[in-house]
Structures are given as structure tokens and as C-alpha cells.
Image 1: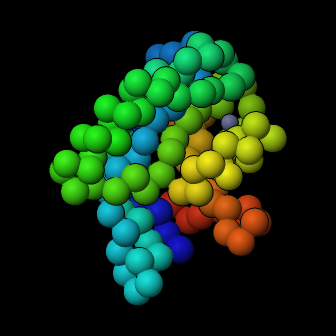
Image 2 (image 1 turned 180 degrees about the vertical axis):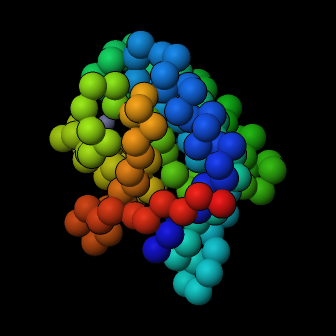
Length: 135
Ligand code: ZN
């Protein structure tokens, strides 16, 4: 399983993370590819407001979520992932993130202001790391 992201998108996400004093979050849109549609190609990142306005946690603003999801559907893009930042801890899932993953069983990408990033997915109830490929 691979998560393929364009370099420009990664740059944009790191910039977004660096310029915020709260966790940033949003959707990664694109399409599934390969045998069994196991790989994901990220074509766009769309930020959503963090309604908690917290440097330690996030919750996506429902109004923004609906707008992004509607738009992606109209344009034939799939939600292949969710991104958010960790400002002061490594890009590994928090307890809260794990709970959130149960509601959104897509790839979860975590970014730090230093540009470190790791991706995770819940498969059959277990957390697995996903290989990130820069395209
Ligand atoms: Zn987190």
C-alpha cells in the first residue's frame, strides 16, 4: 500500500503547518489506483477550519467539511486521506486520532512544522504505517 503525493502538495502542507499556531487539518483528494485499488494518488489538499482552535487537537468544522466533500464529489475526486499537524510532538497517532480514525477509515497523514510526515491507516482494527511516495 502506497500513498503517492505530489511534491507541491507536501510543500503546501508544510507551509500551512508552519504558519499556524493551532493544528491544521483537512482532506486529501485524489483517486485509488493499482491492483485492488490499494494505492492512493493525492491530487489536492483542502484545508478545513479546526473548530477546536487548539495546538494539541483538531476537529474539522462541519460546514467546511460538507463544502469540500460536495465539491470533490462533483469533480469526481475521492477522499483518499485526512491530514493534520502535530506542532510539538512526533507525527504518530494520539489516542484522540485513533478514535477519529474509526469514523474516517482513510489514510491519516500527520505533518510537523519541521517537515516530518508519516501516514497511518486502520486495517482490520489494527494501525499500520503507510509508505509515502513523493511524485
Ligand atoms: Zn493528531
